[in-house]
Amino acid sequence: MKGPTFVVLLGLATLPASAQAVDRRCAVWQRELSFAHAVQVHDADAFGAHVEADAVFAANSPQPQRGRQAVLAHWRGLIAGKEVRLAWYPTQVVTGGADLALSSGPYLVEALQADARPRYTLGHFATVWHRGRDGVWRALFDSGDEGQPTNEAGAAAFRHGRQAACPASSGG
Image (cartoon, rainbow, N blue to C red; front, side, top):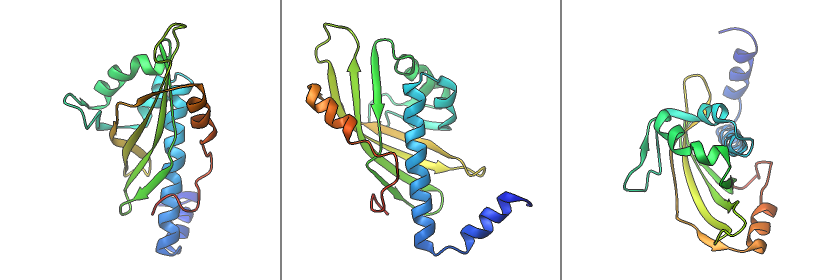
């Protein structure tokens, strides 16, 4: 191993364990935001790049999607964003060793039909991330609740709550 990758790995090896955990946590935080951004810009390829090959989505449901292709097929309409608009962001990331992390936070679904009832649904998600041998964090398990209807004020509060930077105390 030569070049910049080696220097970065050597630099991480000299960081205290707590600093390494913060770096991992913040890397997952940014990866979660990137994952959500792929849906916001309707980029199925970018979305797929965030999903582990043997991922399980809707993991808490009776019929989870198993494998990247099944996840992509199920999410096709959400990614296209023609009937609903989906947004989410992390509010907590907790690391579990060097290659596992859990992120969680709120999601907002906006129905785009003018007469849709409810127009907004606000819920909570949780994603288990796995860092592969290539160093890339990918979603391994994803789940969420059914959400509850909310109004314009609830949707605005959701949008206002998004933090682009990883806060110092969002988990461990």
